[in-house]
Image 1 (tube, rainbow, N blue to C red):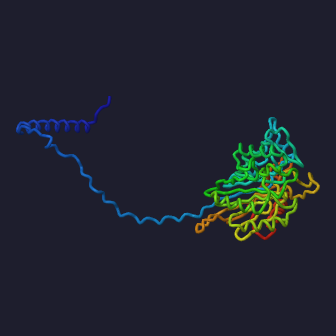
Image 2: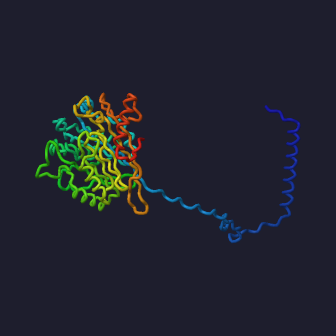
Image 3: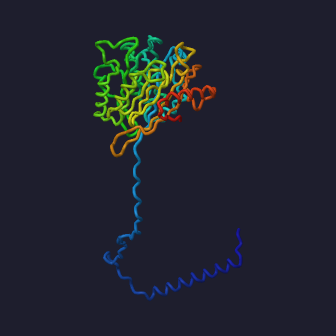
Length: 401
């Protein structure tokens, strides 16, 4: 029990006296007051408060809207995916094939681009029942899922080996890429498909991808199925580039399978036809492959011609091939920034650079040479130097990144 202090007891008595006095005064007042007057509804005080316009402080002067920057998108492009038997053997698993580990080091680079473009040199089997390798290729269809894993958005298919598996190889390749969700150009299953333009979205732009080969090595196109794969023909290329524009393409990319094997210098077809086609207002970029070594980049006006990007994945090297130079293990990722000209509405390449790559034949991993991934630094430096010298051989700066 709490005991009150003297001060607390004094305060309590004072409050008691005040309450008693107040009650007495109230009783006396009530005796003298007149009877209350009834209050009607009309007499009720109106508690409604009329809205009074708020006085707003003077608005601060609005800051001028920032000018929107130009729209851009990025491209990452690579060379030949050439699946030799030893590459397929390295991808073998208990229940099939898995090529994805071979792309582990470069997948983040490819996936970071708005548009990643590959070249499939070898047709795929629809059922893996009859696989074959050099000199006529039909490779496991699981390659398509690795292409998707790597981050590619579209692949060119027209090559000198495109017809190696006949119609079955065409069916296998197209169906495998379709299942993997990767767009493609350069093969078709019908005349109607042959005339369909491949359109892909890259950032805010619509890009057309067209693909052509100089010829076919092991099988020619059947007379009754000339649409199975695309041959280089200037008139056809320019016509299809024009159609791509009319179908909504903001930017048109040609993949060209051409050049001499193992030659870093472009051949006559490349140096004559390439600039002529690129001079067309309907063609914006040419990406080349087939020579199995990196070739130079040329600038035609304000557009770029990438003559050849070497091997991105293969078994070629001096140890596996008597005529293969050491540079057949080198490859490259070509990076391009494409910017919209706000005045004209046209999209142009405004920056170009490269990542040198190298195939480690111990496990066929594609190595980013500049980062090495634990490989011999001297070996990586030699590969990087070979690629830089080749890609800049025509005096165009294509800086490493």
